[in-house]
Amino acid sequence: MERVDGESISRLLRAWRGRIDARTVRELRGVVPRPGRRLSQAHVARMTGVSEGWYRALEAGRRQDFSENFLLRVAQALRLSEAETLTLFLAVCGRRPPGSGREQTDLPRGVKALLEQQVSYPAYLSDLAWNVVAANSLMGEWFPWVLRPKPNLMRWALLHPEAREQMLDWEDSCARIYLAMLRVAANSNPGNGELRALVEEILDADADCRRIWAEEYDVVEHRDGHVFRLRLPYHGRREIRVTSHVLLPIQRTDLRFVFITPADGWAGI
Image 1 (cartoon, one colour):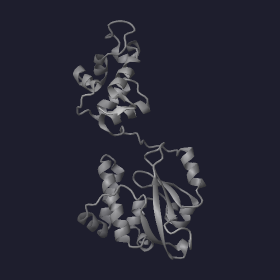
Image 2 (spheres, rainbow, N blue to C red):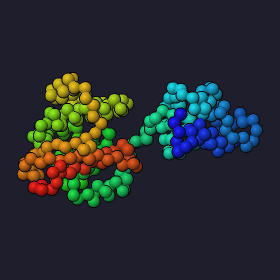
Image 3 (cartoon, rainbow, N blue to C red):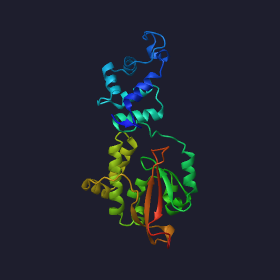
Image 4 (cartoon, rainbow, N blue to C red):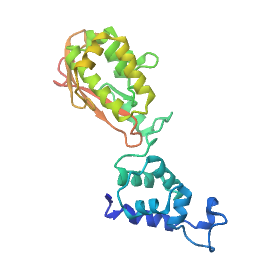
């Protein structure tokens, strides 16, 4: 398995198991052979509902088809912290545990402050389904749609008539790229019902999007660094070229921090 900071996950699993007194485990009452004994591999197998050989394969570092549910049960049995659970998942299957980007109602204070204090560029925060959860004042001035109820980037860019007027070269510079982003997101999060419903809504609602979706196979993960042309009421409908920048807040990897800068500097903007 992968090595983490010079230590194999096998060594970490043994250390995590060895720090638990079996007497404190409710599931093992009546089966611990002697007081004070630390958890054994057999104990963890019993607690996670698998054979001892199956758990032994995990701890020995042998590649198996370990399910997310099994790894979550291991994390619970070994009383792993969030960081330890993340380490287990990344080492064993190379991905984050399900729910690590769990829904939260409060934005991290630092991220919120950074957004509010950004007065030079339009900036916003969106979630995995491109719902805009917060925006700075300049974003609202450039793009008033973010001030409407439940603003969603994909719905506006792909379905709203004003987007086709304001985003120049709409089909090639906007629609094809955003649909390619939706294709990646839908396949990366197949269990995300909101994303699936968003794709279905857009394809059901617009013939151009259906045509592009059917004829294209491109995939795009994000628009970081992408240059596109706008004609906004805020700028007197003069054409401007801007660049989008996408950051992922470490405290909330389910959010995107996006800000927009002029591609040609501030002259004339």
